[in-house]
Image (tube, rainbow, N blue to C red; front, side, top):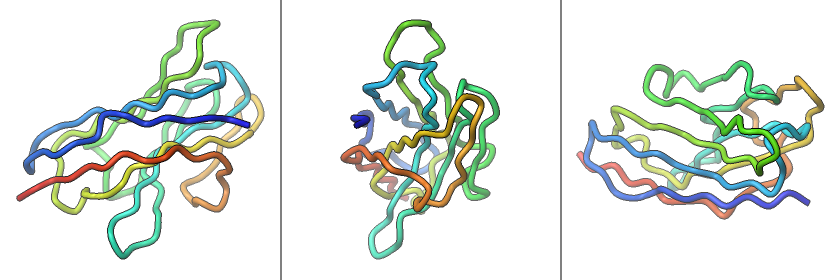
Length: 130
């Protein structure tokens, strides 16, 4: 069982920035993929950004490319912390943001479909006003 806890959400004006964090109960180099998803009111949960296991390539939804950056701690022998740096925020970015994890093997990758992911945090609210 992987436990995830998000933090860093809040309210910001359009054009502003926020940094989300996700504390995981697995180490940085464990064979789990991690990613960020969001769910806006009245909409289905959608993938925002994911990373290849081991901190390799990152993958983004087209709606956030160039504005959001996913990263993780690379320190050895520590629990993994996943980040989402969000810049140039828009009102349409308003949503509950979730951290997710799934076993994917070393060097593995999981896409942006929520159906591929198993473990979820409780979510953190991000509100962007115009």
